[in-house]
Image 1 (cartoon, rainbow, N blue to C red):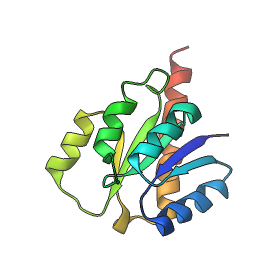
Image 2: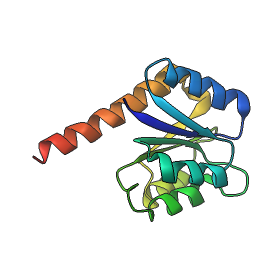
Image 3: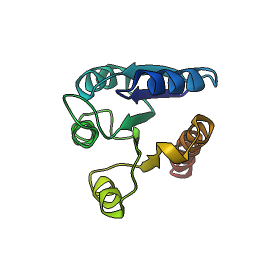
Length: 131
């Protein structure tokens, strides 16, 4: 069973994503802010982190920088979500180790689920091809 950490400050969006992923057999842990998100990620070691850019206490990009330094989390895929599309911002996120960027306003929860499944599938394909 795949594991996903959802870090989202908006309760309604966080709960909607949680319901969607749990209904498709994901093990889900959630957090409302970057600080508590880092705490759950360290113990949970998710396959994917789905995280908003704008978070209380520690921003999404700052959380990414912390995640990439934590032993055991190097293989976790990170998807940032936001409601604005700026090419320069996307390039910055790629530079800090983000695996994808999703415009929330343009994607349904089902489409986000499909994106996550695709990323997890690629991760497994890469690990099998190395054997």
